[in-house]
Image (cartoon, rainbow, N blue to C red):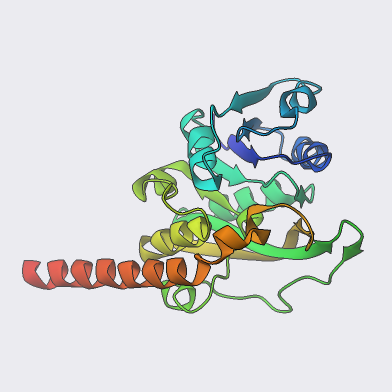
Length: 243
């Protein structure tokens, strides 16, 4: 099981994009992988797409649960020491996992890796790498801005479990909440080489384009930051009381 990676792909009406995501996972230079697709009660026939490929685990939610719950279901159904996230419309570069696992091998204190990426607009136009220079990711910086792109992440399973996975009450910014919690106690290693293509379709039907979900983004982010500050204060208080 050493350096095995569980690839978690939540999917809700992904259309033809899911096949490109799956192929990019299968094309990884690092081959010790398990792929789990969680169909979040799509109206499309997601299962028929998944069944084209061997050895991919397919799970269908009985109702639409959202991205956090779908990721959690996939994570709980697997047991590899590393977990990597791939959205159903994104595309990994073939070196994504290899570069990520190299970082873990070099430093046992790394709890999570993330990295650079390129925006793929309307499946036609590919941007320059998002970050022009390497960045350092700390809790203090994460409290100001989310520097972590979900599709670039690979996380030690015990680190994910230590923060209780993703908060299922959040339908937007649930990933930011998880990264902030991880940054409170763990080193996050940034990889400057672009690791994936982040698909953006302004007229698409993804959750990030839904006005009913987007209206909660600012309030969710504020609450995430306030809760994190409170946890840090409590930890500092606990340490001072022990002294």
